[in-house]
Image 1: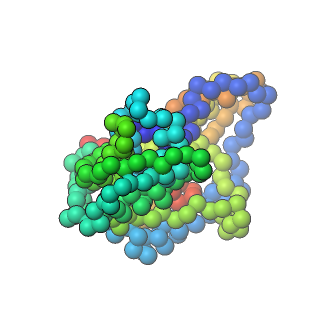
Image 2: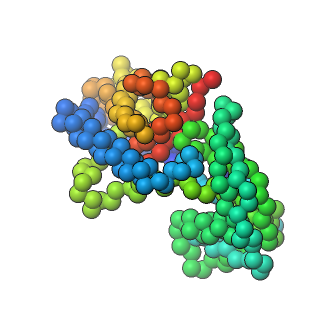
Image 3: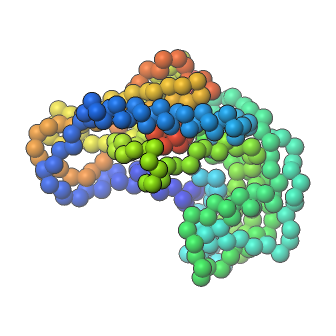
Length: 302
């Protein structure tokens, strides 16, 4: 299964671009106070969304809601048009899809934990897939849907990868299929604050957490992000520490960079780095989020 729409920060790994000898400064006490304010704001926004009842299914999707099954569109279809039509949410079908919702399904995480969830109809899943458009393509030819079947697929969730009910859509002139998450009552994360949102202030610019892992006791989080290739004892290197700001429903994780202060001509090369933080209490059913109140995938330890 290939996921095409992931444009994450991992793309910067290995990128080398010459820059001047500027060294980033560590966060000042004033900045830390502002970061903590933003963290509390993110927790409040998450709490408000949860209180509104959006999280009734206990399932929080992280990342793509549509997955590509297969890696070759084949000779009978224009692959470039197909990909762009998908991104634009352009789908058509000659036969109506079932509008009845199937019985409840099950989400199963890698640690064996399961959770019953409502399953939406194929028609609703198609509507969701159309609504997931990320860029317009007025000249694209819509993809022709020839059928749909209920299956399961691996999606990224706030609790790590999970087998999730999905509607698998067949497409005309290609063996490629599209799996659309079929869980109803999904948690609707708060929208990302816009530049005009005066309450959000100047956003903290620091390493962006890609995902995290949790120890077996549920207390120690290891966060994964892209940072300097070398440790802080080398020019252009940096050390990293993590901090958690917690509530009853979520945990904000913040990564601080502690760069080497030696002037040097550094590159923009990136490497995978980690930092650990011990929580005040086990993560449990709480969701790990960033300063924009967006969920981060956590893989549980065994």
